[in-house]
Image (cartoon, rainbow, N blue to C red; front, side, top):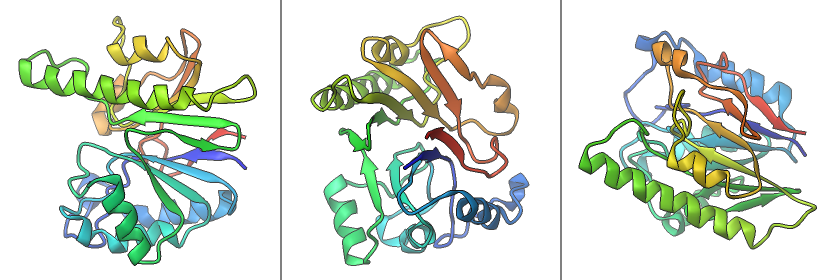
Length: 230
């Protein structure tokens, strides 16, 4: 019952936004091959954001079908390009109507898998200081707090706690509100995505103040899933 992660799939089976222009040639097949080699039905795959280019939930069926047909449970988090995202109730209803049963969502809630409590929020750009961006930033901090508080209701010494985010919650030479918040809880791992191409230079991984950070954008990982927990 292992936990794996991969983010920023940017699937476009239902929309005309191929990723070839970014050099992502045949990347869906690369992900599928690696997924089939690694994932068992009892495993969990975390998908922290930018899952589909679709603009509307109704357009996402083929993208969801792609991962539904792969083994394991899947847990999705919202990214900045998931314009199709809706209420959790609406998304769950949509998947049920399509007989898609292995996918759930992390949004203002927490998720327990084996002995791991998984919390998270989309996050936001921690460097932006203008009023509008600060509003979104503060709202995302509150969403993460809500998720962590819900997770604590299920926490005991037999469990661990981790955080999923889309945006990087850490930056060199500063401590973000996201990081401060995580340090107030028994969080031991944090995964994130969002960064592509030249922005890979901004990646921070490894232990920082007792939290192990892992970047899982699919182009950064070579379109391979990363094992987060045995």
